[in-house]
Image 1 (tube, rainbow, N blue to C red):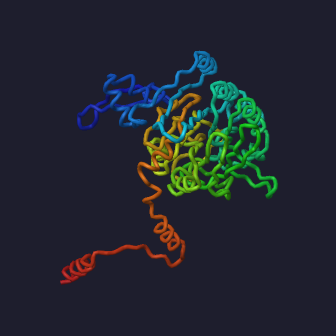
Image 2 (cartoon, one colour):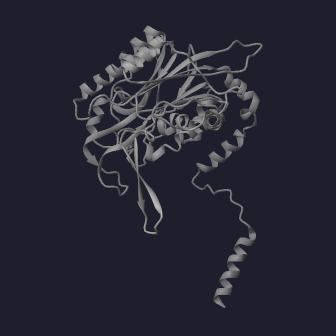
Image 3 (cartoon, rainbow, N blue to C red):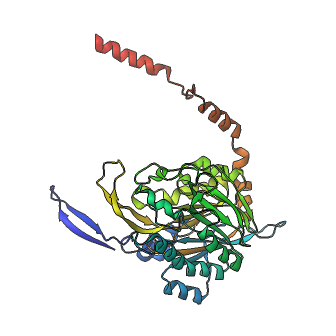
Length: 425
């Protein structure tokens, strides 16, 4: 919600002062989509949506009709529930490859002052009905948010939060394996990993749980932020698993964890390895990144001809001890507001409306993976790329004696000398 007040400025003009209430909404609306829908005439909203969300196979994304029982569960458990569909053109030689994919965003369940065990168990209880709803609605692949099993405490630099770390086959994985087996569902579980075989090193890791309840593999976060309050390098360093793509019963998937979305080559590498869906489980706050949020994943989907699922946590997490981050700001006890807004992007530049900015949520999307190859054929990005040129430049760039390829205007220096000579005279 917002309150607006008019005040007279020094120059006599009337200015509007906005006092935003701390509920994470946009002027009282839970998303940009709902704000526009409520305030624009239908024909204007349709045109604005075309520009903001794009068209899939020449039309707006279809809503999926879900049973009333699903909305009853979402109302009872207080989570946002949305469902959409990405189509592909009908082909003569291939059958459609339709996969139902889900994203879950959530806030923590207890204050960060509660016991660690209680906090973790409360998150399990909070997510259980949302995961059950995803399974009951036929989701084939489900992805949770970054470090879903704990508060995102990496702003504090306090090492006690490492107690949340667990092995790849630890408690959180075991909790999700039951759902994977029950619902024949692949689950991506981003956790704080403790590598017990290598000195109990901590990693930011996504565990890929197969639809038979098995562990397919893991991927560790490639890029670690050192910006604002994101003091994550205090806890873990850059991952060592490369850019793996996991082949499942439902398609080839990859995980680009959080800050990796700011690195185009990271997206590219998953595409080169054959990914059809890349998930971006994140924890990011409005002041730092919200203008980037609807852009980067969509760009990656377009450039690499795959689908992208973007997940962000929700809410403001307040910690017991205030902290600073060397940026000149006074000490504070929270990151800021995690703005949710989870959504899907498609290789044809279309995307779904997002989930709420301030509520837990489940986003379900049917996608025909045939669209990936159809867009590769249409745009020819792989064919027209000049990888040999990029490889040559990168090889030179990594050498200590690298010099940028800059061609200066020969008159530029003559002009500078002429000006210097005139000033002397």
